[in-house]
Amino acid sequence: MKEIIYKAKKEIYIYNTLKRRKELFIPINKNKIGMYVCGPTLYKRIHLGNCRTFIFFDVLYRYFKHLKFNIKYIRNITDINYNFNNSFDNKYYSYFYKIKTYYRKFNKILNIFNLLSPNLEPRTTSHIIEQINNIKKILKLKLAYKKNGSIYFDIEKYNNNIGNYGKILNNINIYNQFKQKNYFSKEKKNNLDFVLWKNLKSIKIIKWKTLWSTGIPGWHIGCTTISNKYLGNYFDIHGGGVDLKLPHHECEIAQANVINNNRNNLAKYWIHTNMLTINNKKMSKSLNNLIFPYDIIKGKFKITNNYEINPFIIKLYLLQTHYRKPINFSLKAIKNTIKTYINLLNCFKKIKKIHPKKTSSNNINIKYYFILCYKSINDDFNIPLLIYNLIKINKIIDKCLNNELKISFYDLKKIKKLMKVFLIDILGLKYLSRKLYKKKIKVFIKKILKIRNEMRKQKLYYYSDKIRNILKNYVSIKDK
RNA sequence: GGCACCAUGGCCGAGAGGUUAGGCUAAGGUCUGCAAAACCUUAUACAGUAGUUCGAAUCUACUUGGUGCCUCCA
Image (tube, rainbow, N blue to C red):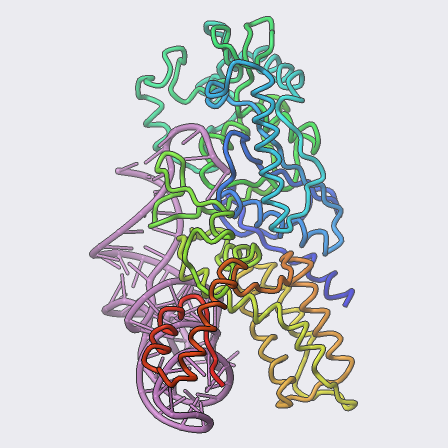
């Protein structure tokens, strides 16, 4: 076993957005990994799309831990933002109260998905001094300019002297925009320049006093500052959703290269998770098509009548598509996942029922399946392939249960370990027993069924069948 | 315009060179008063064209159709 893990550790391939190809994963410092993921902005509940990203990086975190890497996982909390600052009441307590509420909700959702806590969840508001210092550094190097108390990053100067803004995307269109006139802010020299410090003197919100003005730091400087503080100025993995590639991640890189006086582009591997779409449109606030995990769990959608959708079904559903592909939200797909979930997670019950033979099994090579599973994950975290393989192994368990295959005590133990390692430890799934119907309906239906039975006694089959048809959506009736 | 991505059966959805994904549905069977449920069996497939290969749904090129991003966003 140990040598399998040892081997797996050395054969991880990651699609690096920076290079736009799969690369062998070699940590900067031997066994240590630093991973930074852009966390939530606490101005609304997190939706299913947000969850996808966090669930995916949780699997990464679990996997690296499983491989005995010494991993430090940082996920920041953006608790300040120019846009939502405005929407809150002017009183500070109200602002903090809202932030606290959203943070609690955020944690609650991640808990029901059984996500591990990152090593640290640093907040933007706790790192104001560090951010101001970083802005000072950029100003000193004359790669930023002041305008009406706000500080802007100067992309043109940056591109001439240090870097190549737009490197991650290699987006030529950026330069077309570059030439366009500023229509977002008259304060900017160029359209691509982004704010490092925003003067908000006139608006009554939470803000800080500096030499330049009273205001708040820009969004991008927060991530650069926090990741550098806790992971150093060059770390292994930087993750986030694809929609953050531009401008957020480009800005982070630009800032980091200036502050650290290098061209490391902040992190060695950049990983981007794709979007969750609905009707092939991106889930976003502006389109008002957000879906929240609780809506599904609490049965807002009529996916199925007999089961409550538990969070792990949703989790499995989100993991069933490769992270670089978009998922189009579909109730049917979730419905399909229910069976997959039950089948897979039932394997432990099945294993208990199997009577192992003394003679060793002839056909089952469990080591091979272990390697197969590790290989799946190692190929750019191909979790769908992993799940496919686990379904295969589950079929073997079925065959053992039906005595179509003989299995030795030793092999059974190994197969149990395999399922535990991949389903529970790495994917972070749990078995939750299904609830057939809600209590209220249960009582109501029971009463109707009583009447129906009386009808059947009187051989009024026509009416009893009618009732059964009506109830068919809520309960399946088995007559003896 | 640029940069990406996608195309799988009646439907939803995996699969990344050879061997059953899975589910829904349909047909047949077991069971049964009829159904339902359960179980068993069976069925239909990889957008098109060319290439690489002993072998392509899978790799390459082109074509067609569709989508996303380029503006706060996971």
